[in-house]
Image (cartoon, rainbow, N blue to C red):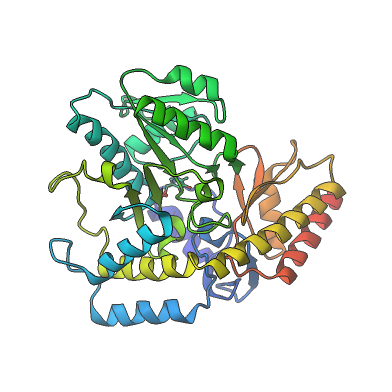
Length: 398
Ligand SMILES: *Cc1c(COP(=O)(O)O)cnc(C)c1O
């Protein structure tokens, strides 16, 4: 079965994922995934921080089934009930005033970047440059690649969009020095995901807020990975009492249905007028039915408490793993249920992840040779204990 899928993929799908992990999942239950041969795996990656509720939330399946029976799509030239309700739910959860629904994280970022430029265009100011962070990741479209502070993503695509300036993450002086009279925004992930699961921390987030206020420029936070409750608060910045002007979300927003969003404070959102932005699919019935459900469920204080508890338990487990093999790993890092265990060279994190897959644990990797853990929020202590035992066992082997 797998060999057949593999050969079709090799022949017909663009070779952008290279040699994939040698498994094809068929269905899921709770926090378990089952492959096409019926093997059971424990999921510590949730499809890159997407499947926050695991695979057995009956309420989620029910609202989706109901919506599929009614309508998938009409276009946003008409009112869409779930879109309006999901927008309100997202504003309630984030403290923002206005929302736009897109189809992916990158698309949400594109919208946020357009909004920032339009805001200053309306003011008659020639501000269009965005300062972003070294090691950031903001997406794969031209503008979001440009904003991504990792040169190896840029190199093959010459003559890219322009307008990004990169500063080292958490370097307040470099950030101040990078601002000029064409800067429109500072963009950052409050917890860098792809770059290596590195938290910005409260001090840096507050400094960014202050610098933006001082210069009258916009603060954009990319919470596509860190948002939706993953760090134990709905937005990672809420923990630190910092409010951006524009925030982007995706990944867990649709619980697996492709949907992204950017949300803004009223003064910024007002910059868009009819015709400035749009999308055929964005915010359609199916996508926003999923989003309304996910936002409501993940903003619930009891759910956030669950994330905090499971996150602390997983952190302690990873810490114990590190303590057992301090010569082969570094201290774990991250927040809530977005955590990394850095692996010391010459051991490669990717090979380590493959070993775990052979032992029926699904994990990801991230920059800096890290194993990345982003399980469903309903992961159990038993499942974490089992992961810990495998990690220790593999490290002892090496
Ligand atoms: C995944 C991700 C994106 C891109 O989202 P896509 O849905 O893949 O376009 C952007 N920013 C961050 C922080 C991400 O984790």
